[in-house]
Length: 137
Image (cartoon, rainbow, N blue to C red; front, side, top):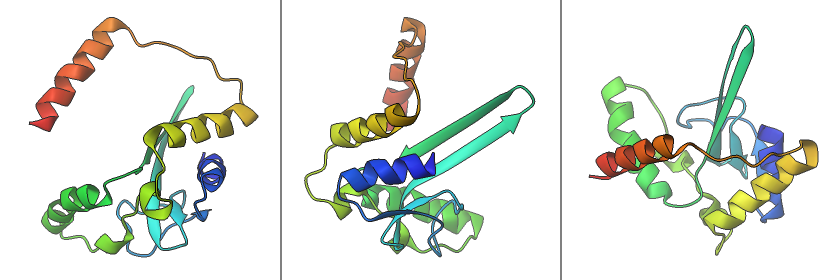
């Protein structure tokens, strides 16, 4: 997953690499960074008998918003981190849109896997909209 994300981001002009940035939030060896200096994506995985899940968060824009959320959390947990390690794709390449990042990621995955488009059930979408509204307040 991390290598696919590096390929996708490189197509957009990002100097992307796999690996932890010293002082990054949620540190992990599968983080994707820019220039070895700022974290752009974090990948989490869980493997159990009979199944696996891999999830990735890509910070496309608004690194300052991510820092604003993480600052009090890391302070409350009394964990050291360096807020300067929070990056965003738009901080690396001006003018990149969320849609461009999405398309680059899908293209990178399509080179390796057969992608099948799917749809969420209406109930799931309705619940997501409700939760999104609650968390934006």
